[in-house]
Length: 374
Image (cartoon, rainbow, N blue to C red):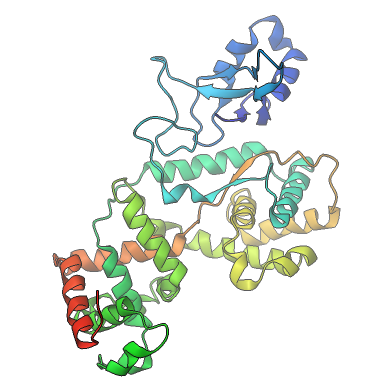
């Protein structure tokens, strides 16, 4: 149930009250009803489908209080939910709860001071015609087209991701070869699963991503636990849906990171709130950085000129001008490309091994040697 929708007539995202007010003040109201206008004008703010209509606010008969806000709904000519299956507003039985959807940003209701600050920057940009909500819609359509072009299904064991990490990050004892040390099991924090993967990484050394880092430097982020966790989550949750090759947007991702870093460096508030390691994980910041590059034809010098204009203005008349759900098209980029590369290695080697079985067998063997009870 989208509270706001994108109006093609007014070229921005509006809630029901805002859209109706503009409609009533325009010549359109003399020719067509508001409902028919909405049906032909608005698009879903997340997946851009059409066929919208108004669902009036709900009023409790006993108390007269509002129990539900007026909102938009989208259905096709057969009366079926028209949203795309991966859209956050889709409610069909085949709804796809994908990791790929994690890049959406709501500038309206966030309690984060960082998001609010970026929302102000967005509002300044809109108010001074540096970019528009129409530009945001076009960028979202660009990303939707990429997602729709997906031709790949993941067919890979999560164990391979952990093997890849252990091939790059392992204890000093096991760096050259696996060395059994029964005294390790008595130490606080001993992790038998980590020990198993370090052992297996020597037995199955095919997935050393460090050998490919010149091809894509983000393969090296396999060393980060958070990236490994996200990659496994993608394999588990998104393996049944077609995915596009994220490596094709590597150059755009690098530009977006570079611009985001420079923006934070030159913004006193953001530089205090975002560390160098955290800023690339900020969906609001990466959404803004990618938007600035998108409207500058991915020319970072042109994008920076726009940032300089915004930073000189600093204040905004209407803080709600940025009333829009942003999008970070590069969310979880490292996890995606790591999976893609591991899939390529697996297919090249025609690797059909059962890694569930291999992992369980090795774990059972090591637990006996370390005298651990299951």
